[in-house]
Length: 167
Image 1 (cartoon, helix red, strand yellow):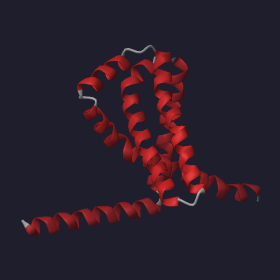
Image 2 (image 1 turned 120 degrees about the vertical axis):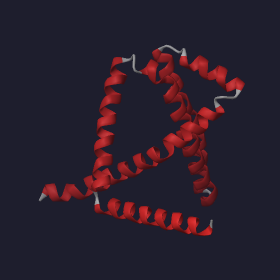
Image 3 (image 1 turned 90 degrees about the vertical axis):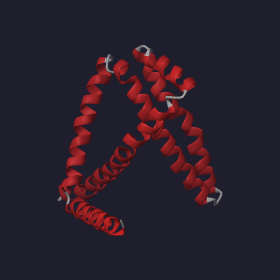
Image 4 (image 1 turned 120 degrees about the horizontal axis):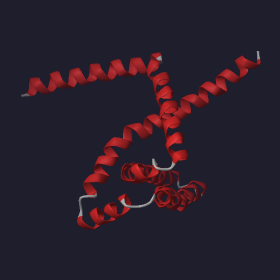
């Protein structure tokens, strides 16, 4: 009986984590590419070269810094929500999430070699990758995901056919 009672919250928590990870996965690669393009600018190219040369613990601090810098922005968003400015507060949270994900994606790409020299980080990262993949496999196996995937593929086929019909 207790197992059944705990199953629903566990499933809901798992679903929440899966949705957060799917959001990150969706945005990670394109945002990282956009940041890499920006990294081609002369000043940023020098900054990125410096980041690549950081020792492991300095790389860890460089990875954590943007997260800490976004805390005041998120607090401001909460304050805006409390003041009844929900649209602005939500927009600020979304913008902070987008910018934070973009920065973290680029920084991780630059700093990963240094970070992997930290044994505890490499072990934690390996566990994270396995756990995340298991969660993604779980969500991809659900009937809801399969249905959405079929709809997306059907829509893509229809759009291609429509596009070819225009040409």
